[in-house]
Length: 192
Image (cartoon, rainbow, N blue to C red; front, side, top):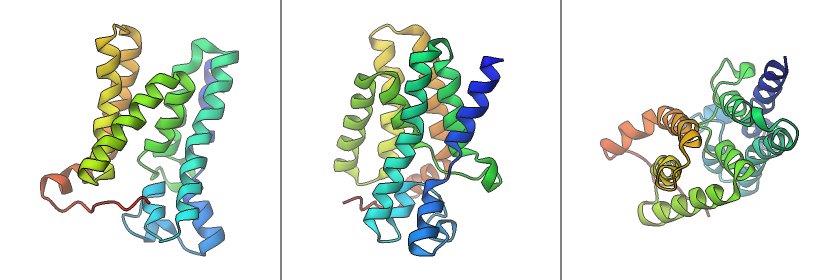
């Protein structure tokens, strides 16, 4: 029963569409009709309002960080169920006909909640790739791959399976970006 309660609660927490909520309240716009149509922080930044964009980023990280830390303390054996459920809630929110964000900010919250070191590895890798390429999507894909790669190198077998699944999910959510990258049609991101 705990599995079900933690899974459903985590999914519902993850499915809160902060990008949509903040742009509707403060900008009176529907983020799904701007830029890529995505509800995540990168697309919210395309509105030109950096405060709303970075607020979306912080809330999307927090909606994973806080519940996963709670589960880690109280139900440590369910940490991967909570993490996956939160991520799936963000990517496939029931409120938006299962059309959500790409999950990167939410994944960052999960990483820092599970282990600060892997959170730092992800952010560092993302920043380096972004500084070189200026592509947020490419940075997210490579940084996501860096986690199971790092865990494989340090011999954390069980964790590798979970983080490989997360990499595959992030790769999936970026499939349109990958096509655009291959065709040299992907937009470079302005995050500052």
